[in-house]
Length: 392
Image 1 (tube, one colour):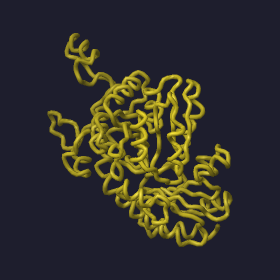
Image 2: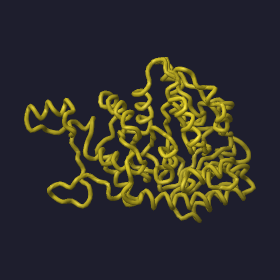
Image 3: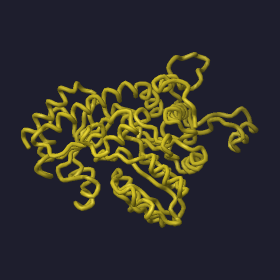
Image 4: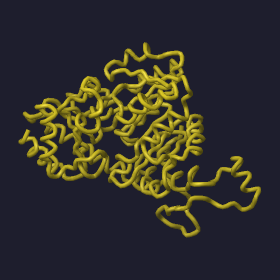
């Protein structure tokens, strides 16, 4: 595990590539598809991996390497690889580590596209998934089969912001020699470090809070060096690499992650507290609300509660749509973790393809609304929510 020399915010700023002969203060962009060799022997040795150097930007690039190095240091990981999107990171990680006939045990509450990967695409290669509910961790061991290879969860979950006990899951994975993978997208390495609790790999959609401004797509997987080596070899040959430009953006964004997430969390807690007192709201879920079912666990695992608040509008699916239609400042978007506050109604949008029974099983009621709380002044965010709720 990579040791941290400084505090989080310092490492996020000071971890960068070596300066060129121009002695630039801020990291330059390396917009090149390939790199040249000194001679034929240099080229041979480089392709034979006898030298550690850049060959082709589908493999590595100084900008992507800097971004990965930062993420490894911030997560306490040995190694990593960066991808074009968060879902490229998820798919490539599973595709690299699984063989036909392998089995996954996963929490049922996962991102919709990950669920589709598990239920529609991986079965094409005879890879099956067994689900457990977030409140049924005691059932995990009964789902483990001789061919089970991976234990996978998100915490906090999307969109219902449930919390799973990472330490308990890590112990189960270790007991059964499973690869333990955590999607840490909602928390970021600033709020939570799953490797400390036994995770072997940590995945992020860097599109979200890591970029934080809704500009670029990106993903990253960090963790055990031996597993990252397999992911690198798969990705080097299949091509889901992060572009150097997006890597440069994301590496610069990490420099402000701490201060941004502090404000996101401060705003989100105030929004959650407001919603909890509103008579048009049936339920509010936010990890650092004392009413959250896993409040004590969230306090143990996370520095703060994150920027996502889930709440149920009284009146079901039509009330949820009506609420969204009346918002004036908040954006209606599929993204989250942006400077701009975003509202999403999962039952009619992101999770509309699931049956009602499947939605309810993962905590997505007809009236559930997910708010990605941004960096606007919290009084303005609350004012917009308040006026929209008047129409419900």
